[in-house]
Amino acid sequence: MTRFVPTTLDELRDAVASALAAEEPVELVAGGTKRGLGRPLQTPHVLDLNRLSGIRDYAPSELVLTAGAATPLTAIDRALNGAGQMLAFEPPDWRGLLGAVHGSQTLGGVIACNLSGPRRVKAGAARDHFLGFRAVSGRGEAFKAGGKVVKNVTGYDLPKLMAGSYGTLAALEEITVKVLPRPEAAATVLVGGVAPDAAVAAMSAALGSPHDVSGAAYLPPGVPRRPSLPAGGVVMLRVEGPAPSVAFRRDALLREFAATGETAPLGDTETAALWRDIGNVAPLAGFAERIVWRLSVAPSRGAEVAQRIARSLDAAWFLDWGGGLVWVAAVEPGDAGASVVRAATDGGGHATLVRGAPGLRAVLPVFEPQPAPLAALSRRVKEGFDPRHILNPGRMVEGL
Image (cartoon, rainbow, N blue to C red; front, side, top):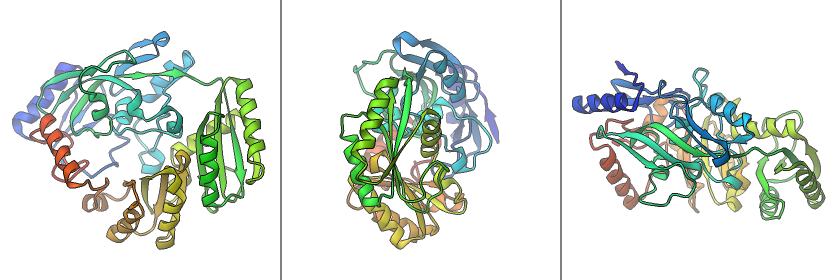
């Protein structure tokens, strides 16, 4: 196996060109923490992007940061913390869930997989903060798109196409993202003793209220949790911002949901730890032998979908994004389990197999199977960027 380790955009282009000339596929790797996502690859070469790292331009007053694609998120967080800023899409860390004990999360990794945390309900997805990039396509051509300004609507929106492409279209070399001020304070309102259907109604009411809720999740009875949380079904609502505003909105939520269940507040430190756990899928990480699915559905259907799966499978679950994100850890592997999970989204939505053995991920569609017209469009996009299928071939769809 050959390992290419480019240090510049030109070297990256040369490495891809060499693979293209030999018609030998490469696996794109940086921190390596997401190699367990998607379908397993069987490629003769590795394109190691680790040295395409470092913050290259950061203008706190402009709320814009540019860095090498392989820059560790820890380095970016340090720089942003120093200026009181953050990546507002709250990138989750799934190393515990995936058993990736080595490696560091990188900016390029979270952007390429379009991973967003609990704040997505307020701040949007990772792709919404992705302003521009430099990359090398599977044609061996260097190109760039977007820019270093928040409003840039000329031409095609290639950043949104690259976000969530899992390295199958181009190798990212540099990324520019929008950043936002870090909240001065945060608090969480817990509402305990809530049944699943009532939880969805409560989260919907909170998100539709004037209290600017930035996180809404639900843990049903029996799912592991932090000691500070009640044992039964619990709704969790987060508010962030200036300290006086947070205190006012926290108290308002406590009053408004007092009739829904037993309410209690959490302060800054407990709030940070709790929502880090939710984003990192910590409640399900301990089910080491189970298959983990991630379902995106209409928020009003979150509890219905989760309970439908749990009636057919031995499954633990919880809800994020106000009910729009359903996490399920199921015992049943293979076609039987996949059929139950995907049937639950028949009313709209999609299911992704996030954690499973390589053999399972090789035979099951990891991502939601696409309707024929959309699949044809995906093939045309792949052909346009990577006609010889040398970049992460088969990571998302067999044959591509």
